[in-house]
Length: 298
Image 1: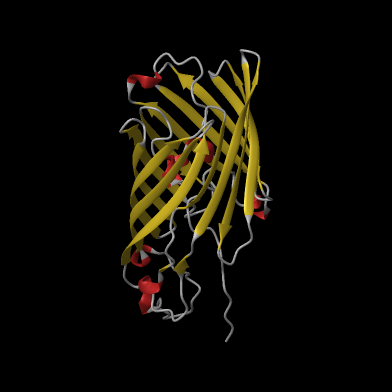
Image 2: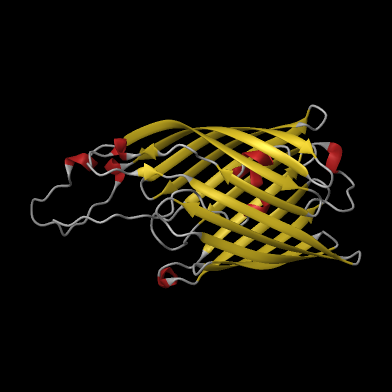
């Protein structure tokens, strides 16, 4: 007799977004010199059954006299009985200006969405002889192709980016017979950051992220990290009224950097969840990073 509209998180959320630019902006492809790979895992809202779990891996590099960049990303995201797998190919053009490099990127994404309705556990309080709705009696799968775009300005000390990883509003109610529409909406993101130097030993990094979705309020997060000799970093950030985030970063020789974030939930969801864990490793595949005195901190 009554219907309501619900709007919630659709795309994976990243606390370590400042280290994982290719996952949110196709113009980031090739933004780092040489060939770089990122491995990422996030377990959101630990303690809640069916909580979001996200795994991703990407690789990108710059070539053609450092004018072109290409990136490839694979992502797997699971929330309850819903699973999503993505493969994205990004292509960027890098234009060297006076003090910054301006990158323009396009992205094509193949996405497969599945709903494991047959594996769902239904309430035992439906009454004697009650059976689940036949609509939810079998697994459903739906796939689509989407396209994204972005711009990215950066140098060794700052970055500023705008992106829309999925420009096409895709309907998802092919996995259901509901008459009301379930859509993947267009998400727009703005990121920015700056590195402040203090002597030869200490560096400070300030960063921010804004996210805009159709039919939802703008969300934001901002934070700061402190680095000692560019080998160890620690900091925190704040995501609206949702969470406080602690972050650590370590340099592993001259081949990789390891990052970890813990989200302490500050919303009412804290009564049911023990927080969120996120870990990422950035691997420098080519030799262009070896022996750097001041490695890129984003």
